[in-house]
Image 1 (tube, rainbow, N blue to C red):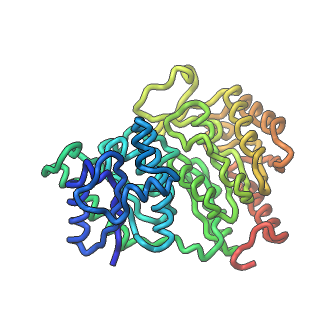
Image 2 (cartoon, rainbow, N blue to C red; image 1 turned 60 degrees about the vertical axis):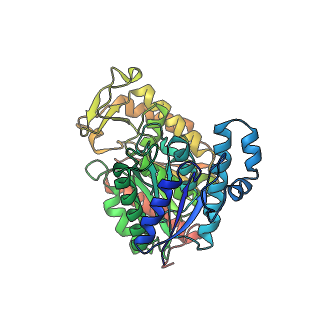
Image 3 (spheres, rainbow, N blue to C red; image 1 turned 45 degrees about the vertical axis):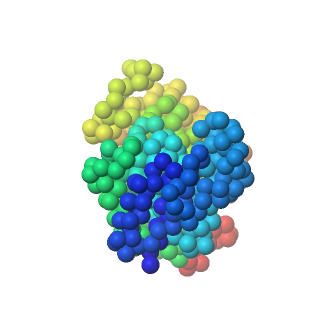
Length: 411
């Protein structure tokens, strides 16, 4: 039977958690309960006690209470619950997880869910679901959230609607999920839609013909988080990080961020990587929010009602160039930077609406100047959307296959 790990503070939310467990069982699922309380005790014993959780964090409930600091105490429980969840999943003890909480419980839930691999159904039922207080870098790539409406204290018909949906969702997901097969070497690629960046249209089938599986990540914040989390796990045989715009987003304070560790995980794991400049010149902003004062005066492009982009000037592009190269300087594996000197997105071509020859030249010059010794720079007299760019990337991949840097299924 499908087993769901149900996590929460059973001292204060026993009724709500018991209801959630009851719905899962009524739908034919099994429950593994984990208590992350600190001060109180549940009405009935849980499968995993709060003492076991604290011990897994190298601490104890007594130490958490003695700290007289609720933030410290919940961080102990967050570490312990994440550690235990990871161990239990590796042992095949559960198939999906659901965590219930307010802001404290959600803080813990983010750590627990991030400790589990992609493909494990992860649901958070929270009073602060979708809130801007949740930093993108702490949100697991495939986590699902449901607002716990009207559920701050006690059961009622409003919150039962949320809880019952969540119970059905996690159980259904655990039954239906098709986990990643990992039967072919995986290449991770970053991009945007093919109206602005087109290389994936030719590269994906070409790489698949060489025996690779190819996953293309939409580099709009959470896509970059998914890409980085998989790179940190060592899931990729190689990465083609051709859309580094999230680096600039973070640098200039955009809310559409993949976090400060963007473009570092593959290098830290020694994964071979090819990097380029897709949309490097743009900073994405939330379309319905005002433009930040430090970006006032720069031209912008409205992509839709959710997303707009500011076009960086020469100095802004120099900062992006230096930041990218600083990140790549720490890479432990083979790293190649392809520099298409004629532009990095369809809008910035000569004659295009966002073309700025001087700013592009400033970026190109700064990339060459800032390139560290561990990065091989490939100058390309072409645009990123030209066939010459995709051909250059494939030539590098084929060279890596030939010398054994990476291995394809057919090699």
